[in-house]
Amino acid sequence: MTRLRSSNWPLIVLAAGVTVLAVAGVALLAAYFFLSRQNPPSGGWVNPVEAVQSQAVAPDLAVLTLAGESDDRVVRASLNAGEVETAYATLAYSVLLPDNLRSGNWLLLAGGYQQRDPARAAIGYQAALDLAALGPTLGDMARGDLSLQAARGFSALGKAQIARLALAQAENIARYSVTILPAQRRSLLDQVADAYQALGDADSAQAIRTQIDVYAAGPGVSVNAQPPLLPTLRGGVVLPQAVATALEARQQAAANLAARWLTASSSSRDSLTQALGQALVEEDTARAAFYASADTLALSDRLALFHDELAWLTIKYRVARGDYGIALAPDWTGQIDEIRTALANSYTDLINGYGQQLDTLDAVEAAQARVELLRQGVLWTRLGLFPGSAEQTLSQQLADASRQLWTRQGGAGLTVIAQNVGDYRFYLLAGSEPARPAGQ
Image 1 (cartoon, rainbow, N blue to C red):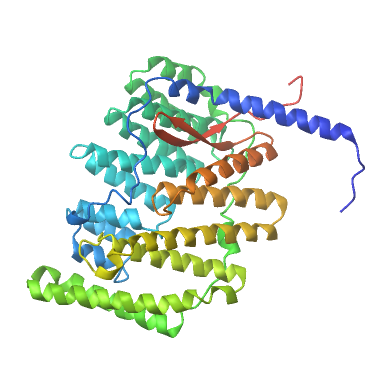
Image 2 (cartoon, helix red, strand yellow):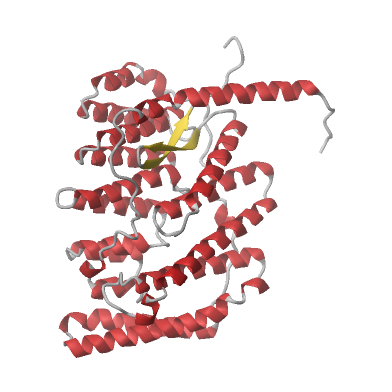
């Protein structure tokens, strides 16, 4: 690479450009802060995992995930059977669902709770709105649609201020995304205007309709959506025979319980429960030895092991809390705090491991991957999967990394911001028109 000559002028110009972009970004967030001064919503964020009502979970359906069935299939089967709490628990504890299925299922559950349990519906819309801003694998059009659906849901629950925040985000996505097409922008903006009208905000609706031709043209910058980078940093591991054997035994015990539960006598149910519990304990022993070998692996393979470990610890945490609807491993119930700490440590190790892997990327890819990683980390905390108090630290790091990436891109596109409104914290997408040369 050719070495550039030293000069102060490029630094001065760059500093001025960054200042202009920062001011523009702050100006475009004014709508959010204006809304925050208007009757902040009551209540606050609710941990989706801790809101599970274990006594209402159907064990025969819940343990299907332990038998090897996919989370999405169990959620749908539970809803079809009218076992809404089982669907909720399965979704809340899922670490494997991709962002698109996870967000769709949260909206589906929220809609089902709308009339009979508004507080639970609000948790679903809360998760969907978090996914709209933080889900690292979602495209911008999907983020806009999620924002719209969350806005409609919050409006139906009488939470107009939160609905307006969600609509402001949908409008920002339509106007400032660099990856969606003009026809998509117009469709999204039409729906935002209609939603404002339904909220009784005719002025906001009219303002969008008046400028829709300008807004639909977008920011004048278009790029292709980039595939996720984090999966490229992860290697793989092969389960040792002891773990594979224990896993197979656990799946068989879970399948037996699921198949026989409804027709079994009380004593037979106890036997089925004890058999599955024993299988879980034996698998835990085998896995502990496997996870102790992490330090012998290359970093990329260690990341794969960390993913496997946190998936297992999530199962163990759910068992300890009784959220399969039965007490599968009574000894674990007294170890909830220890399991929660181990789970938090596993997430921390995973995030730090990915952070080290970012050094293998070039500067442009590293900036994108850092935002992707921090988005995922904050999302894990918001979904209740990553217990503890890491959100504040990760949130600040995400705000800094997102703004740095946005500045590197010339102020084009969307950046993630965190905003407190009353007792709520929101993660929202904001944008700005890219800087243009003087005279244009």
